[in-house]
Image (cartoon, rainbow over all chains, first blue to last red; front, side, top):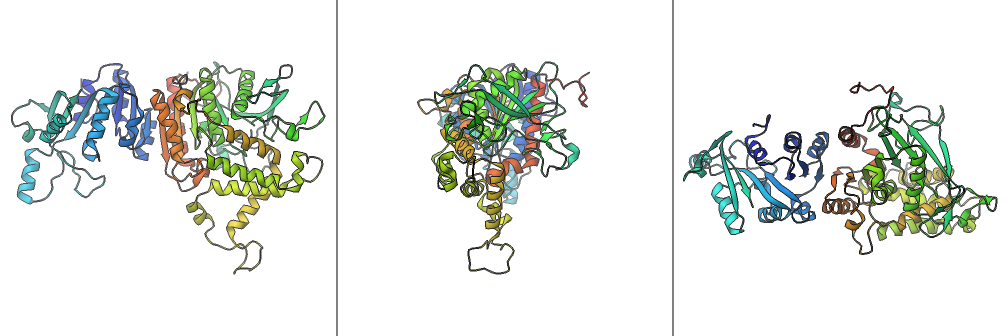
Amino acid sequence: MSGAGLRADLDVIANLIEPGEKVLDLGCGDGSLLRYLIDTKRIVGRGVEIAEAKVLACVRHGVTVRQGDLHEELRDYLDGSFDTVILSYTLPYLNDPALIVTNMLRVGRRALVSFPNWGHWRCRLTLLLTGRMPPAPGVPQAWDEPPRARGLTIADFTTFCAAHQVRIATATYLQGSQRIPDRFDTNLRATWAVFELR
Amino acid sequence: MNNLSSVGLITTQYFTFAKDQPLALESGETLGPITLAYETYGQLNADHSNAILICHALSGNAHAAGFNAPDEQAPGWWDDCIGPGKAFDTDKFFVICSNVIGGCKGSTGPMSINPQTGKPFGLSFPVVTISDMVRAQTHLIDHLGIAKLLAVAGGSMGGMQVLEWAAAYPDRVRAALPIATTARHSPMLIAFDEVGRQSIYADPNWNRGDYYDGPRPNAGLAVARMIGHITYLSEASMHVKFGRRLQERARFGYDFETDFAVEGYLRYKGNRFTERFDANSYLYVTKAMDYFDLSDERGSLIGAFAKSTDLIYLVVSFTSDWLYPPYHSKELVSALSAVGADVSYLNIQSTWGHDAFLLEVETMTALLSSFLDRLVKRFEVRPPSGAPSGGTP
């Protein structure tokens, strides 16, 4: 099953969601992932989003959303309130990733995290040859363009998980919209990664 | 707003209940018979599932939309949001608004005649609370044949009634829209209300509430209203609205006439208010707000919503509202999130202070109409028959 018009990492996430799950989407944007999951998997969805225009878009899409900063909002939910907590593409923009990821696993049974991989060979080559900071794969955002991102690689993230005793249940690697198998050189080849954490 | 989307000419209606069995009030006293002034806009659908109750704020009344007379100067207080094609779309919904008990716009309050004495109640009127106001509204909703409201919505004190509906009557409401409000009146809010009340007490015409035969405590009431108006604005909106502009003079008068535009505004608003509001009602209604505290014995809001998790909530605050600041709304959202309720929240960017809930019409319309559309789909609410709305055969 392929989600109609969903970004490739969101398609991976959507396929990991079981029907009827209770899902919290952090940084849910205009709510299109939650809308898709409500329509196709009959999930119970909740979103958190900071931008007013996107909150309005969520409400327009009939999605339950609360405006706020993840670092604060996540505190309110009781332990184990959700089956899945999603953090798609938002990880590089967080001030305190450890706080968010540990809290995702506190309020949810599992966490799904996707991010663009700055470890991709093209990023590395760009920096090496031009001496300029590369944008994330598939995300043409200059270094000084708001909101500011702090790039990370797949190797950074797996090290981070080990340091915070977070278990990686599954990992899906993408090259563009194609899934690629995990090999010794995944961090060079993958443009995006989706991790299922427990 | 233009009159094309107005509900048009509206007649205020009256419903009297608690004739034989007086209403037991939170204070332990009783009140009855009770009359509620109310207006309705739009039509009830076949299964009575499209009713929305609008709750008014401190100085509001049942006249929320349209005109009571063809030559009326201004439409009802929330006409920007109630009408055909507006946020509360009267082509789809049956919208109800009633004056609170303790008020002075047709519902039983301190200026009503006490049937026992044949004279106005004055201070012999029992003190009422937000919970009493809402209990009275349930009688009106029964009378209108509505088992379950689709939504209850209101700003400021109206929002307190919304929260009370959600907490006390969760089986009778599907959705709650508390706007620019709080779960409990803060000491600062109580303080402002008390200054307003003290100003009324200090007016010699007040005469301990017994003034209906003579001159009214208008000076006191006007000052109370001026204080209120300051709290409804923001520093920024006062800069925009008035700046340091002078009122009808080119230079300072070095006297105590009106120098600044902001003074003129407050004097005008204060005086106008005395023409339409009763000083005793101001005391009763502000007291009801001050008593409002939804939290349980342990001071927790979570307990208050424990039985109200099936409702769908939309909480709205405004960034520059320092009277009911956004963190009051966020506290509500936190408690509702903790109990697992379906709660949406938006802190609307605005410079208009507390008044923003009446002024940010564009954002409010986008937000409210989308949210209400979702309720229509979720609960399969059909439009009333004869409504000019497509979709349902």
